Image (cartoon, rainbow, N blue to C red; front, side):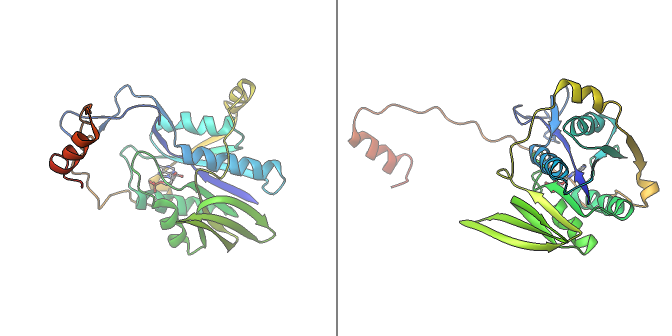
Length: 249
Ligand code: AMP
């Protein structure tokens, strides 16, 4: 079975995001970028399936400008076999990404497409669901366990207050939750080897998809600054402040 993994280049999760002075977007100038953490989990799961002999090839795809190749190479160093970048200069919205991924699925015919449940920059949580709908294939989202059984996949999903297990006929779309696995670190020899693994670049014209968006980002605001706390000298004063200042009791 071939596994296709979709990976996104995002702002590193350790970086405190700054908003541009004109509030038009997050400022990414000179900011450390990284693999989206949920995509790292997706790569790890695909590589484990290959190591277990369940998958025979792991193909990683990223949609974006040339800088995304850094994250594709990271995925190759983590164990993926080859990479595909779809060249898009502007930030594509989730529907455009899903349409492009659907075209790649048509070409590659993977048994499983695995994505992160959400990209930590846009927080959309849409692409996997849209892809499954476009392909008319089953989806198992928020996976905390994935088990391939012959011609189907059992996905245990994290839902409010518990777990749900669904059985998906292959080919299927899976999105990863945080507890699915703990991604490995790339070793230096594997980083070197990854430089020689194949990485193809496709254009949106070749795939016949327009990335024109119906969605416009209007404004980005940082969270309001947290006010400093105060010390009170007695329980009575605390109760008085909660009642009259904070008005929470
Ligand atoms: P989102 O729906 O934007 O929160 O993203 C969910 C998942 O879709 C990500 O974790 C990736 O697996 C995939 N994805 C989103 N954007 C891209 C992109 N530009 N290139 C490749 N995969 C993407």
